Image (cartoon, rainbow over all chains, first blue to last red; front, side):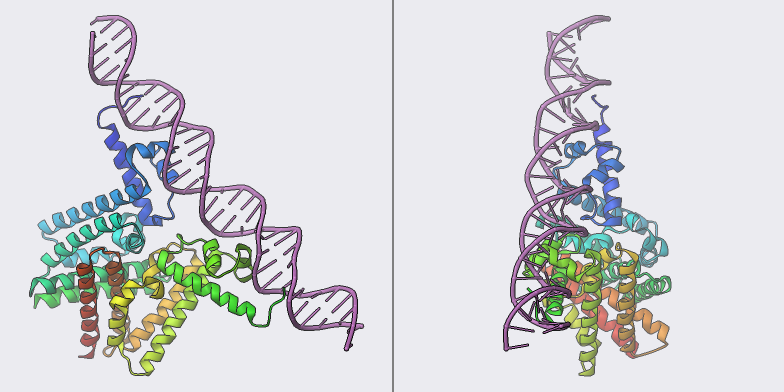
Length: 193
Length: 193
DNA sequence: TGTACATCAGTGAACGCGCGTTCACTGATGTAC
DNA sequence: TGTACATCAGTGAACGCGCGTTCACTGATGTAC
């Protein structure tokens, strides 16, 4: 059958949405295309109507999901929510307990480091935009210092979230999140002095 | 043929060594047992003389490799090398460029978070020992605060190392490492006041 | 001391399975005349 | 207005391949007598 105008775009974004959630929840290598297509209520073959390969899908997911997150952060900043609010949300119990809805970077950064150059190029560009955004929202000295502080802050958020997720002891995991939040706030406040 | 006494232990540790390097370099899911056995100059079947399953191997690798790292840190501390030295080494260019020889946690923490309970239990215990060690080497206030600072410091080291590895731009990657080192030293020094 | 047997680390082929990818086909709708 | 054809998103079976795991077998050495 032939479909209505816009149908293809809807299907494509449905596949992207399913893939993004499953990649974040289970990792890229552990998720098969057949499972993604099944979750999107489609059959195997339709995948290649929308994407060139699995790697193409990975790239689209990384760019698309990071873009949405960045836009949400910019919108939140425009409404007056500062870095402190972002840090508390990023290292919240909810964020820890729902990796499939959370940050792509925390879920996939180590895996992306082993992907082809083109995928890493795209991730690099998006990460640069994130660090720029954070640096812009850090008060204080010269741009280079702000940028380095932004990298340390973001790295700390990513690393503590991953540790909190991997650790199988609730009290210890909570403690890691609290440590991350306090250290994050310290970086933000250190810059304000 | 029948082998000399101690031969089996040697073979086992050869498999462990190969697996540890390849898991860290390529990820657990991306490395097959056949490849590991080939690298260890053995055939497929011999694997099950030494390990119950791939998951069993993963557990042995995690415990063994983290144990060695912790022992090395304790030995270094006994020789007068403090946390500052450890931070600089952890976030060095060499460490970034040789993931297969580096920290298991930085390489595999996100993947371990998705592994079975028993694997996560072992990782949790070892991570607790790491945080204890770091906390013991942080000067300052009450134990709970030291432990939280240790978590933030370790998380920051893990996260910034991962970012520096994934990012495909040398200058940006170097900047991330520098930011991580400076933030790490700030945490250590903050505690000394 | 010499011989027969037990041991067991390692061999290598085979198992079922799910992977990413390909491709001939379908059929409802849009378009041309 | 009615009819014939083109389009193309999606179907579903099939491809070769490598995965983790199993298992009957090998054969040099240790042990028993």
